[in-house]
Amino acid sequence: MLQLNDRLSWLATVATVIVMFAAIRWLAPALEQATGIHPLMTATLGILGSAVIYRTLADALKWIFSRSLRLSA
Image 1 (cartoon, rainbow, N blue to C red):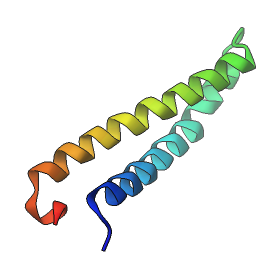
Image 2: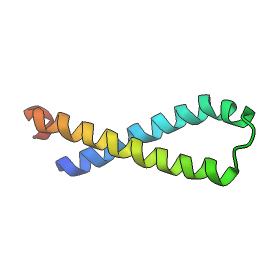
Image 3: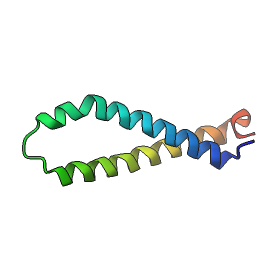
Image 4: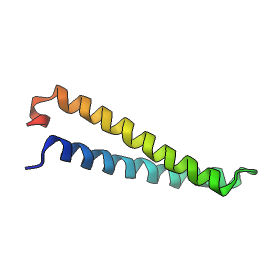
């Protein structure tokens, strides 16, 4: 059985992948149309965005797991 940290990491990773895929799918065309954005800046924002999304989702899941006896078991 997976420990709480393992489930938290797994769920946060899956949720981050889903959110980032959606962002790339729907926001990438808008970013491509924007002028003056350096590719290095776009990559940096993508990396920072991924880290922020992962951390936010991990903290939210940790809060939910700590409040639920069924999920933390």
